[in-house]
Structure formats: structure tokens, C-alpha cells
Length: 114
Length: 110
Image (cartoon, each protein chain N blue to C red):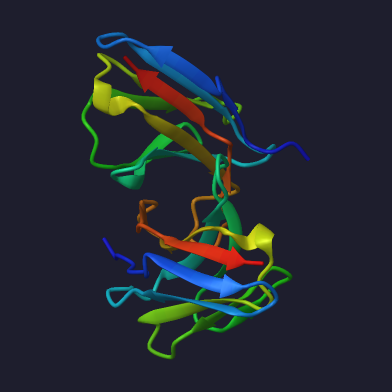
């Protein structure tokens, strides 16, 4: 059974550019959530999607956005990149959004903004 | 949002048990308690979760206080592969937002 796949694994961008990260969930999982991990702030929730609908959003500026496709694959986009956006971006999938459901995380996409 | 509080770090000797505490005094009745761990350069991985009763699986045990305001993850026999950052999080049934604390860094001495 394939795990959660995130692409690209590593990328370097410059300030002002935008970036799109992709997440392919485990087959059959309909919920995908995104997290930002930095040494200073730890793991912070970005947003969660279920059946193509954004269910909740964390406290991030509007430059951070996402979407989910009908096959449950998800993308997140960060526009007008800032140095502080350098981080490991993680996505996780679960069968449903229920609290009882286990999250399976991908290995992450490491973004460096120069 | 319900928050969790964990010690910053804990050390253990190999083959000995490790007890990782987590306080979640503002937990609501519908919050599930989840534990995940993150090894260096990897995404977090699931360890165990529960609602009210104690839980056991092949990796660990979860002991939940009667008032649910705290819980303890128990690694019965620590190995070097258990060295990781352990996160205690609350997964809310009707909110979908996850709140991660700073986690506990576990060091296992050979």
C-alpha cells in the first residue's frame, strides 16, 4: 500500500516568487491536511480538505492557499514568498476528518526561500 | 483550541520503559488524544490514540486519566530506534483543526 507522496521533496525559490506543492494521499483517503514545520514555531496547522472542500484553516495569511481535486490529491500554493516561509511543509491524509481517524504523514517538501 | 503541554525532553536507557506525560486540561468530550513521533528528516508517524479508555498496541500503551485532563504514553522497552520527538495532540471531531505542541525529544542511551 503506497504511502502519502509529496512532491517536490526539496526546492529553492527567491523572495517574491510563488510555489506549488503537491500531495497524493493514501488510496481511499478523502481528508488531506497541510502543516508548516519550522525550528522556531514547530508544527503549525495550515488547512484541511475533505471531498474537495476546505473544512478549516489555520492562522496563516491569505498568501497560503490550497485545493483538493476529485481524486483527493491536494495542492498548496504560497504566493509572494518571504524568507520566513522557508520550512518543511507536511501533508497528512486520513480516511475521514473524524477525530478517531489516524493521520498518515508524507515525508514533506522542504522549501528554502532566498 | 485545546492545547497540550509536554516536557521538552526526556532521557532513557535502552531496554528500560519510558513514560511520556501530556497535560490537556482544556480537553473537550469529543477530543481524541493522539500520539505521533517524528524521527530526524522524516514526517511524523502514528503511535497510538484513544478517547477515554487505556489503549495498547504493538508500539506503545496509552494511559488516560479518569478526568481526561492528562495522559501518558508508555514505551515499554526503549530501543535506539525510539529516539524521536513525540507529539501529543488532540484531534477534535467537529473542528478538524489540529494543535501541535512543541513535543518531547526522547533520547535513548545505549
